[in-house]
Every structure is written in C-alpha cells, then in structure tokens.
Image (spheres, helix red, strand yellow):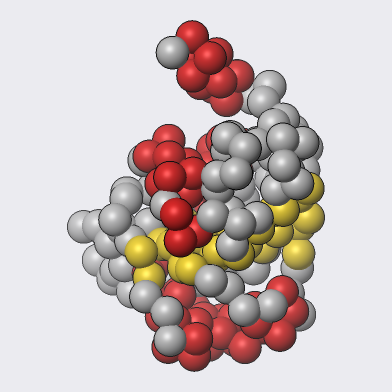
Length: 181
C-alpha cells in the first residue's frame, strides 16, 4: 500500500519516470491522441466535418505507420461529447475491433489499472482517444518523463499523437508525432 501511495504522490507532483505496469503486465505500446476536431457549437457532441475527415485519415494512417493496433480505448461519452469514441469509429470499422469506452476522461487511475489488469491487452499495441483536459495527466500517469509531452495540452491541437513504448521496468520511450494531415 505504501508503494502505491508513493507512486500516486510521484504522479501527482510530476516526478514519475517509470512504467506504472508491474512486470509482465500492461501493453507494450500505446498511441495516445486527442479526439478529432469539434464543431465549436457547445451543444454539438460530435465531430466537425474536419474532425470526421481526420478520423477517416487516422483509420488508414495508424495501421500503415505504426502497425495494426490490438485494442482501442476511448474516453466514455458524456453529456457534452461523444468525440473520443467517434474519432476511433473509422479505425474500429477498418480493423474489426470494438472500442472500450467504460471510463470518463477524469478516471485516469482507473484506466491505468485497466491497462495493467486486462489480460488481452498484455504486451499488445493499443490506441487511446481522450479529451485534452486530462491528456497530460494520463500521459504522466503512464510514466512519460517530464518534457516528452505537452503539459498542458494546447486546446487548439487536434493533430498531435503521442507514441509510447514500454521497455520493461525502464521509463517509457515517448515520441511526439505530427501526422501529415
């Protein structure tokens, strides 16, 4: 318990630089992205035309550039937004995968636990679509070293991808990717 509390404190104060996954648990690679563009109408829960176009392009770009994901995760749809889920729909259709969307974007610790504890995700490649308000916190909780990701996340950025690989107990390797669209 003290160990978990210490890890929580490290994540809270941004000093963690180790994987949150115990040995033999968790995915090998995650591609993390913000949902695609919104319309600007606060009552509209979906993607704009530009956002729909981005989601369609990601359905081709991700497998061609990074390989075929094994699982997809989106922040749960809420009163204000379906966008994280909607962003992954074209990719899910292309690959024949389901989108796991059981957690709200604020439930970062629960997502980390799910990533560690879901046997079919162990050692696999997953894509996560999240809301910008909690993206930096999610990436930090995944053990990304400070300075390897935007913190805070620029609310105008819908195009940045964070590619994280988890080489055992070492800190994850983090790359920021700017797709060509």
